Amino acid sequence: MIAAHRQQDAAQAGTPRRRVLTAAALAPVLAAAPAPARALSVREPEAGSAAPSAPVQTSLADWSGVAQALGREGDMKQNNMMYHTAFPRYDLRVVSRGIVVQPGLALGTNVSFVRYPDGSLMMGDVVVSEPELQGFSDALHANEISQTAIHKHLLSQSPDVWWIHIHAHGDDPDTLARGLRASLDRTNTPSEPTTPQQQSVDLDTAGIDAALGTKGIVDHGIYRSIFVRRETVTDGTWALPPGLGSTSAFSFQSLGGGRAAVSGDCAMTAGEVQDVLGALRQAGAQLVELHNHGLTDEPRLFFTHFWAEGDAVTLAHALRPAVAATNVVAAG
Image (cartoon, rainbow, N blue to C red; front, side):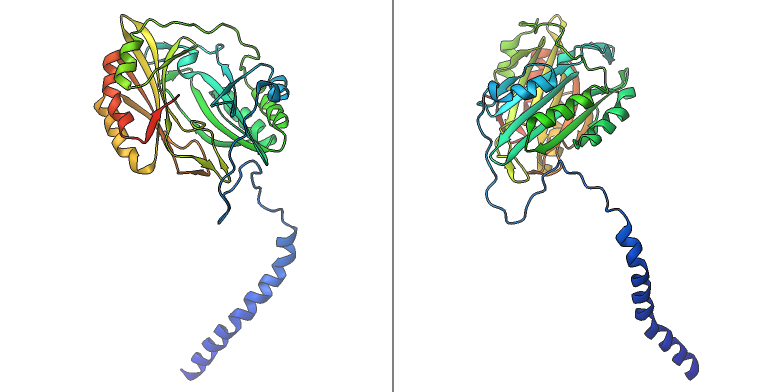
């Protein structure tokens, strides 16, 4: 028995030495192994860092290189702090719940650029068909553009369509734009705008405004009511312009006779999620997705897409509690 204990003690005493020898033997192998890939395009928050940098005001002329790289002119938003370009997917004919979805309702690729004292940010939401998805993802990675969400905006759509949130930082926004253009070229996204924006909609827009408590806009034939978070949302060390990647939007497509299809997106903190989901279901809305748009946003935001059909003003009234359940304000 004593001999057995001595053997066990000896084995245990030798364990640390064997581990050291094993680690030493493996060290050359580990040193030669490639380091795990790390995305370069997401700026990680720094502990104890100073107040986040504010965006710099710019003009259209400052983004001429981006416009040239993307192949179309954009416009300025948020008090000239954000350069925005839209790529509506007019080439897709998508049907959801028996309704032909207008590009402005839920088929719009939108990309924004923001300049900071120490760099530039590109953020957007890109519409791709299912056959385009993998090749587009590969192109994004090749151009060091991060994917921060892969999700749906619509239920039971035909053909299958996906929405990809993209995110990148860099010193030169023209380089970011060229990488995005190369990625979009892996899809059938139209390279040029094909139709002018429709300036009116067959809906009681005044009634919708009164019900939701905001003044909507006509955008590509869709009536859109937009809200932004009251908090300053940060992306790592940078403060985002109000609404960039953090809007709640209710988009109304006329179905005739005062009826509409509504495709919506609510921006929420974790503590607001359940109240919003409950309010949407009470309004008769069908839930589509619950997801994030960013990876390093603060406060951490969640988003839910939903779908509803019915009298437009009645729906707007029913959806108002979902707006009231979040810390948002009508977009200016």
